[in-house]
Length: 299
Image (cartoon, rainbow, N blue to C red; front, side, top):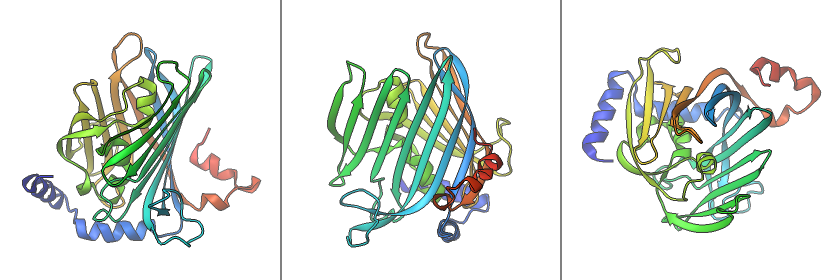
């Protein structure tokens, strides 16, 4: 990021009473509670010439992650470990009679000086026709090794390396740490893995323009909201993420506009926050815990 751009953004945030240094401390304190943040969003999904209702669960939690094996550090016998924010997203919606289930997992180191890129993203798409799986692993801090498995004949099974670029999948995790860490301006950006799957895109980065501004529209409600916007002219796609301007930067909704399948008309997928809880969900796995699903409005 250019120094002038960074200073402009920093000044903008200070005007809005956001102090980056203090927010980093607050963020670390927030994520060190020994719980996970569970968010439930109401979804209107652009798919096949229409928008379809659905639901998305987004879980943020910190996790020790092995940087060499790029898996969760469970035994603590390997010194190659770093603290990450993990974001799990599970989106479900129906198109007519059949179901879609989209899953993604992003592992982003909190030490951005040592690890300026996310180490791993894995994503899958399941529907009644079949399954797709895509995984990005950072290799030698220069490239992403990409494994792509698809039931479509043209795509088949692919493994390749692509030049390291910022991943749109990691926007959510980086934003939750500190929005000042997000790239601003014209950059090379890798679209979300689930979007690559649904649109059958080439495994590559695309030129994108990003911006960070105040949010003053009415699609979502809140006080002192900010908007991080991404636009891909080549893909005719835009993404707008709306969040609170104070740590821990709660994401209240987002809007993704892109050409629909078959008719090519621009339609917008929306995700609006309906419920949020901090929970040790991994220990809440008995029948007596099912009331939490009702409290969150989970289908």
